[in-house]
Amino acid sequence: MTELFLHAMFGLGGGLGAVLRHWIALRIVHDLPFSTLIVNILGSLLLGLWIGYLGGSIEMGEEQKRLVFGFCGGFTTFSSFAYQSLELRRERTIALAAANILLSLGLCWMALAFGLFLMR
Image 1 (cartoon, one colour):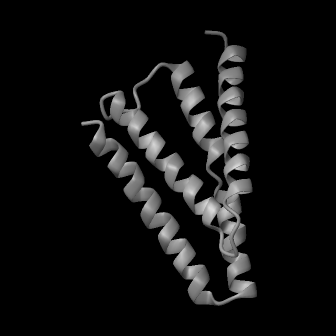
Image 2: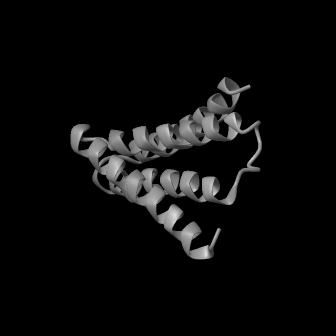
């Protein structure tokens, strides 16, 4: 594989992930950042499923790695999560911001672990 092809695979995955994230965000409209929470959980689950499918390791072909990590990176969004948590603190309460942070981190970690578990 050429390096240009591998970059293209990463870009393709990232672009597809970003488009899907945007599509979901347009359909899940709420006062609280539920769409960000949902895509981050789904992205973590997908990564766990894929790594589990490959035998529980990250030892995969370079093109697969670029496509999967590109997709999950484009689909999930840490920057939006950070911004929305800060906005919850500014516009609402610190309790809502803390709940968003704890739910996001806890549920994403559990989704990744669950994906690995399902693929055993």
